[in-house]
Image (cartoon, rainbow over the protein chains, first blue to last red):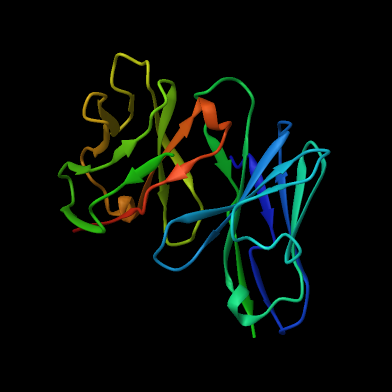
Length: 117
Length: 115
């Protein structure tokens, strides 16, 4: 079964709205989670690394004031798209790693399709 | 810097036949891991198989096997006995132990299985 839960699956909202996406590790503690963005027919682009109890590390070109990340507990990270505009429409997907060695894969949530009207 | 290259944007395979999806990588690190993920049209990323840089044997998981050629820096995914449900995007990814737990993804290959 799923080990990472992401909510909501779909969001359609008006321009200017802020949208919060949650990512939960279901049966393990994740000190690090990752947030990706994926455009149609393209690969995953890492946006930021979410660290429990500290500030997220953003990739170059990602606006940290636009994409707020909070990792308040060992099982929950949230991504808030602030004042969303149509160009923010995309597929957002999170992942987490279960500790246990270098062979542990990143487990992904099911993703969130965000459409800004 | 790390880089993953998947040279096949799209591939067709006949149902029940085997198919190889290519992946080459570039890294200066000695210790790294290679992963393959499947992404159906619904969007979720499904972990398929892992190969460690120090693993001497090629990884296998059911119908999936990884043809790891370290000297050539390639990690091709082989799917045997293709099924219609195998139609999806496939991503090769690498994690270097010197880069923490970050994954670098290739551009992906869209596999279409014909009945």
